Amino acid sequence: MASEDLHAISADWLKSLEVASSTGDVISFMSHFLSDGWLRGQTLSSLEKIRGFLSEVVDGKSRLERSSLRDFKIDDHTINAPSPFKLPGSQGIEGVQSAFTFSITNPAALGRGFFRLTQDVDGKWKALTLFTNMQDLVGYEESFTDQHGLYEGRTITWEEDVDTKFRAIEADPTVLIVGGGQSGLMCAARLRRLGIRALIIEKNVRVGDCWRQRYPNLTLHTPAYQSSILYNPYPTNFPKYIPKGKLANFLESYAVNQELCIWLSSTMTSIPMYDSLSARWTVEVQHGDQKVILNPKYLVLATGSGSPHIPTWNGMDGFQGTWYHSDFHKDAEQFRGKRVVVVGAGNASGDICQDFVAHGAAEVTLVQRSATCVVSSAAMEKTRFKQSYPINTPIEELDLRSNSMPLAFSLQLTKS
Image 1 (cartoon, rainbow, N blue to C red):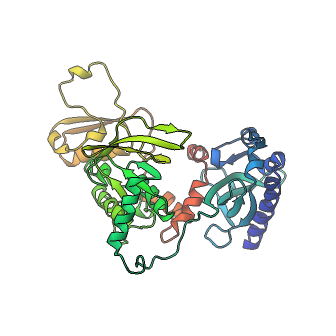
Image 2: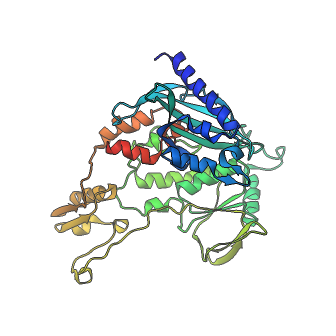
Image 3: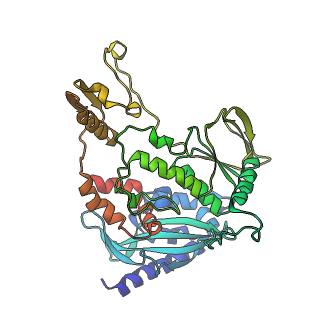
């Protein structure tokens, strides 16, 4: 299909969708979807669910009418301009995909979206997936103006400027971020760019310890070019699959280079309380040997989701050998010449089994509950990573395209 045709199909559909959106016409808006179409923002997968969400009345208006999405424009100036697509494992689902920009009336904001169109039984182009994402609040857009590196008319040094900003953050943080892993660090870096005072509290002694403390032979399971850090890409001579210690050191340097204010060896000591009158939280923090009360406006929990789940079996207490969760795997050498059983068949299991074999375990048995699809890293890179995240391509654009796919729909495609 010619690029002119792809653009015309996308533009016609988007123009019609804008009319429905700007007038708050839910029925007309829904007519732009396939019967099994998806609305990515809420991962809604049927016309009935999408209609119910958009029709819900908030402050006297439907959600669609209240948001008043408008000013839809095809995004012609990026790699996400109109293009053909074919979904893998989807029995031939193909069509047209494109990014677009839009504005929101309430609140006043700018956004970007992404859609995938296929033809229905009557040959009409309709949405298989639609994704909308608010990018900037009007008047508070992220600044991309280059800093010249001189401060207060050359009257203070960079070190003095950073120290002044850190003292202001510690005295009255607008945002408190709990957790100094990659998510917490990138959140703080974005907020700093927006001029918002953000303080991170991290329970470990050093930034990156959440990675240093993992099992010894861990590397990232995704290539470095797909796993980059906001504002600070990895050096081009980094390994393709970054070892955990190298990543930990990189995160530590990232925190310094991005001038992030972090309290290490610090934890919350009680459940935070929110006061609706002052619109602030009360958070008690143990910071070193001091207890500090903070009153941020916003609280971000970036503590991860990987807490160990340790099942119990009859006879565990009487077992004469050693047992532990993979989170606590540190030294395979102590099991040289011994028989080892690893329960579970995920990435950590595979890595730890390799570690036992490499350090001379007499026998290693992996126990899995159900069938597992095992794919080599080379095959995954060829069929997945390089397809979704081509090297030397703006990762923000690739993230937009990737995040526009509903996760539940991706799972359906994987099963098929």
